[in-house]
Amino acid sequence: MNEFFRVSARLEGSRFGRAGVISTPHGEIRTPAFIPVGTKATVKSVTPETVQSLGAQAVLANAYHLYLQPGSELIEQAGGLGRFMNWSGPTFTDSGGFQVLSLGVGFKKILAMDTASLRSDDIVAPGKDRLARVDDDGVTFKSHLDGSSHRFTPEVSMRVQHQIGADIIFAFDECTTLVNTREYQERSVDRTQRWAVRCVAELERLTARDPDRPPQALMGVVQGAQYEDLRRRSARGLAELPFAGFGIGGALEKENLATILTWVMEELPEQRPRHLLGIGEPDDLFRAVEHGVDTFDCVTPSRVARNATLFSSRGRYNIPGAANRTDFGPLDEGCDCYTCTHYSKAYLHHLFKAKETLGLTLATIHNERFIVGLVDRIRDSIIAGDFHEFREDFLGRYRSRGR
Image (tube, rainbow, N blue to C red; front, top):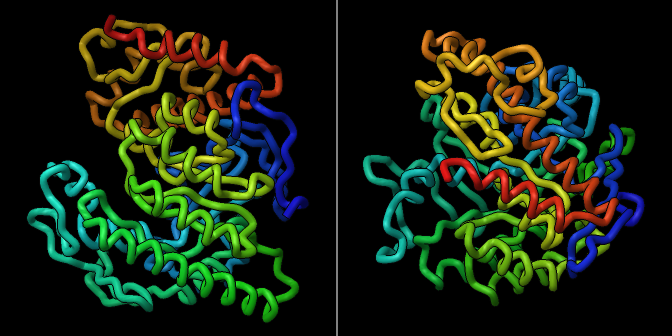
């Protein structure tokens, strides 16, 4: 395990925060690090070469989506994910568990519901048919593309991720919602633990069958929603298995992030890396690093870019706003991305108003560089010993927009 991850610096004044290095067959990842999401073997609207130029050390693709299209067998024939998408660095794949269930019941709409007054173990978003059903062996689901029926079990997820060939992969888990009852959350945590044992066994079998392939590092995923005893139970159970590291996922409210991370970090072995799934807002990145997270992935930078929302040192803003029409300055003063060094707010405003696809590309370049660069600076501040000063300065300016 120590060969996979080593700590290079400790965050002063923090029980858990650190900087380190993850070693993979395709290179090192200096942590903390933000991992851009290339769901279908592409970060939407930009080339892999562009993603690399933004300073990204690795990319994360999605096993569910690649299984459905173009098929994990085809990616295997191409020589694996990196060769297929012309990415030479480290790669991650998530297990597909979140997508199977989120697309199957409409998580986005559920998150918008009043969960405080609603508890159900068969929740489906309004206006959506259930496309996924969970049992103790796995999940049966219908493709969101064509309605065809499929079955994911821990073994299937491992085989799909083995074919895709990413350096770092995740165990198949059940992702619940905050709407689910306490009783269901208990059963789900126990189910995810049993699935984790099966994932370990299946990857060991696949590795022994294909000894000439580069090794894959398997990470277990901590669940348990917002319940302390369940989060701790999940973390303790996974820590007993020979995982290379751990993902932290599942339903939570952002205001409880630090508390939940504290529970989890107190149970996980500190010599193994921790990945926080689906977190990418600046405030959350600082909070998570301080509480021991080493890597992150999130679709937010590219998703909000396609909706014309830009990150800046003084907060997020919407580029089609009237004030940007005659602003010939960069999207963010001091940003070193290609977009900011070559194009103005006025030009981006024009592209989005004219519905030109170049606007999506230039906005994505900026947002991905902003978040990747921010986490790089957080890492540098840990090593330099001035994390707390950097955090206060950055967040003070970032939260100043609109004051």
